[in-house]
Length: 308
Image 1 (spheres, rainbow, N blue to C red):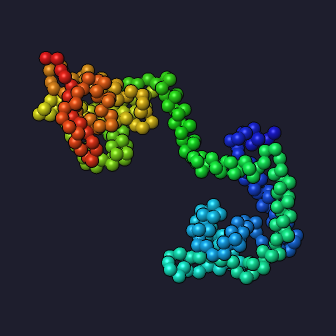
Image 2: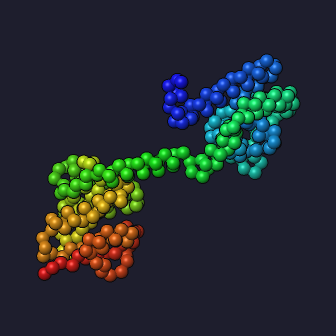
Image 3: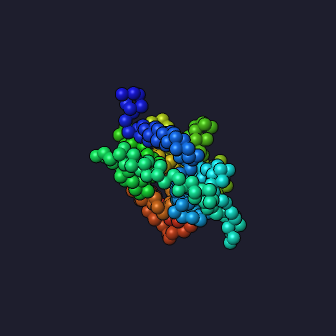
């Protein structure tokens, strides 16, 4: 067993590439022994056009499952070898339509016995208990249901979430340095500006008049919030938690730490985004008034009953 074999299923792409390369090289050699000037990489385009005589470049790319640039590159080779014709669409000049030449059609006739032999040989190779063609169809069906990238991302996110939840050390402290302030602002930009499309100039208002807090998870920046004095009391604002750390009660930790920093005799309030109002309800805040929009996001005013 070589090193790649030891990688198991992780090397699936490498194994498929290796099989494809062997088949391609041996098919090229087979064509050569039959004095047929034909490259295996041209097969998909020639075959599709033999069944669908007149297709646009985009339609052809979709049929053969290759990217638009790769398809164009192959078409240029075929055009140089006088195997296809390419013409502007009569109704849409931006489109180019492709068809086979007479030379190509004649070539297909000479290749049909070779294709029949290839079909039989490939049937022999795949006639196993775990039939490769059936397996590929099944894998493609699963990829259509949910692609490889999405599956990897979900697994990684779940693993990271589990690891973080099990041994996470969450800490919240008042921002004391320029670096910490920079981290807090970066978190807010990620959440408000990038995720929620809040205008940056709106998001940055009153920074100089505020006391900022930073939450960390295992010493890594994870969330932030601030408070400031207004004519109505003390307003809590800009609660933001990075997506990666949500669901870990970081918002609760920020609320509790800020409230512990406030004097007991001043009114405390905030404008809560409606979707996360539950965070403030469970920390003692009560709704006051109706829903309103701020930066095109639904909010409600919430106040904290204080003991007098």
